[in-house]
Image (cartoon, rainbow, N blue to C red; front, side, top):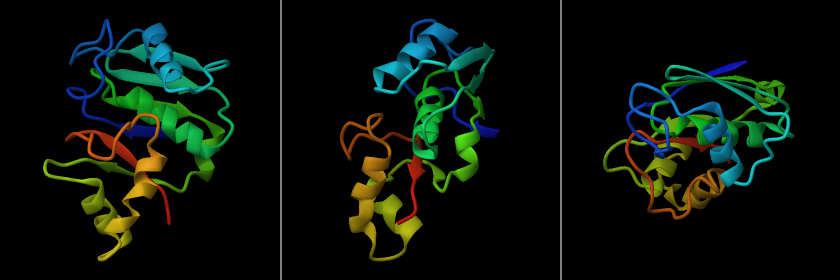
Length: 146
């Protein structure tokens, strides 16, 4: 099981969500599906600003992306993910700060002079990211190993 923290006042605004309350489970499942992930067998439960999710994603990358799709929505402070695939996860999670760019994040995580590796981070966060310049403070990103 993995426990992931998010900033509940930022993220995708979904009908039924507020800063104090996550969107209903059906709306969150639709959000995950919107990003192209298989929601068959995915169980989502909402308790206030905590989302509990279980199921069997095909691999750790998909499991991490499902967690990010859920957590980067308005009203979600915590995602409790009960995915066996997360035990094999290699990615770090990074909270975007004001003034960050993917280049700057790549340099901070991969080392000085490695800002040109930002496409690795962009690709690791697709389809939630649609353009490398469209990140916002408080958003959580996957940082995969090089």
